[in-house]
Image (cartoon, rainbow, N blue to C red; front, side):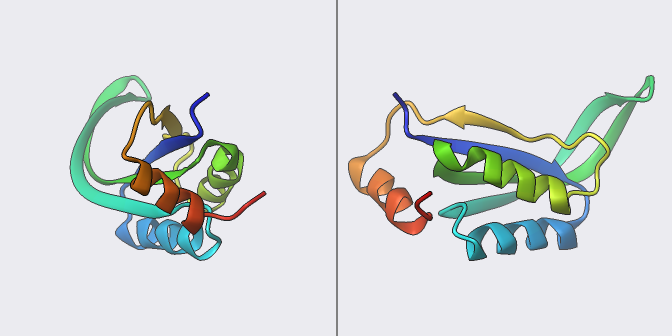
Length: 106
């Protein structure tokens, strides 16, 4: 069974993105976050939208997913925020051990 995952969300407000990052790291819910500026195209209210967003990719333990999701939802400003996880199938042992060490135990 995979023990680690990458959780992804996107948001158009960089200040809120930084708040999400800071809270998740402070609470040790994630070991690291990568933030990238992107252009997202999507359907919303019957029309195609195109906006600048900040994509956050967070590394953590799978057992912390629900806590991370709840924290993102608490801080996120979207009506329907993108929040999902992808299992880490494999990884270099020292990196996975680092995730284990830097995130809280339940």
